[in-house]
Image (cartoon, rainbow, N blue to C red; front, side):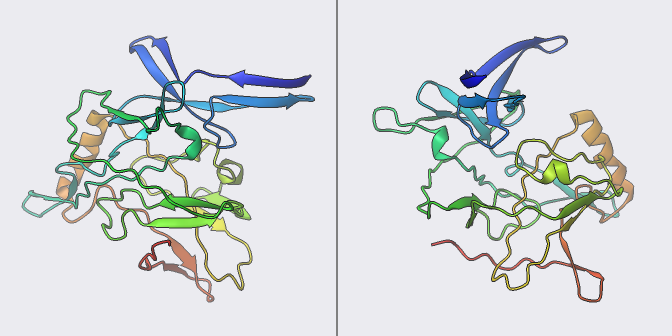
Length: 280
């Protein structure tokens, strides 16, 4: 019982059979905090959950946090792919998708501390991959204290317009009333908080979530904030899936996600993307 402070390291290395020594980097606590320590007032059964991420594919961004370089995010996680297949033509030739070379990574002020008046960051390629880096920029966003900031990240193959647009939302986000997946399973407990716990999906098949956002009558603007993670297949599994589309001309192996809104008559209507309005 009483007040206790729990401290974790920014990186841990664990010996895993078949993999060797694997590095894991501290991510976040279940409440979204990225600090390496947490003070907990224990008055009964108490849980303080944090998440470590394995350092893997794509370059990794590390930011100086005052004591060391902490893992922040993967860089260019898909946005700069060279030769990403969109679909096959009837003659078997490939048509490649768009390519967007910029990636946008949000850094919370708690993740970075100045060192001799400078913010220090490192980008490291931890996998056996080829990565091209031409330039990097740090953008500071001045916003009200009661708002949070997000930007469009790289959707590269889907829509190149509006990339990097800054959006502000209330820090007091409302949760949906309910959430059901495509098999009718109640997944609300999995999506009600940004805690690193996500819904599961079936690979190579369509997946959907039906959300009830409640009564939004009178709302001047509605913004849906979604946090998700893509789990990439192995090269062999991904290659086999793509090649099976060679006999399906015009069909995209990796179709983009989309949102539908229920119309007054009860039908579902595909939402259209409104041109973004940059924040001031």
